Image (tube, rainbow, N blue to C red):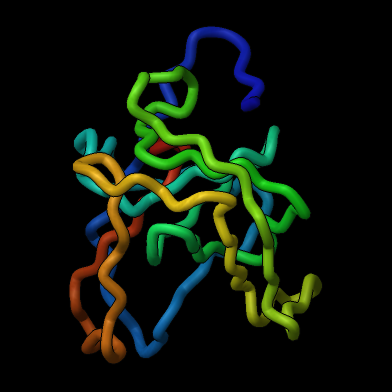
Length: 162
């Protein structure tokens, strides 16, 4: 379980003032003081139904549901066993509509490099398929790279202040 002391509201955060570059997938590299999404805002509840929360204890990681039984995430979030929270908004409380599914298999990219974070991607196979509904759905995967300057949405959990 996520250990949170005190009274906290930890909602899903969105950042939309982000322009695409020539990368098909971008992942954040962990650095000191990286717990902030400056310029972000609290996402409207149920507005990012493919966003999942990975219960790693003290570490905040997320991912995207790519089909009812598979999640894509960053390899630096790897643990041999992961509990995946689907349909979550405020991760500090149980809201009642979440799905909690354990991993059956966690697969890091075979050439993931912990020193420079090259190939920072992994797949998580869920032990049972997610139930798709208004709070939980799969992300639409692109057929090609987005054009330069296309507005993109980034979501995750963190602080919006510095």
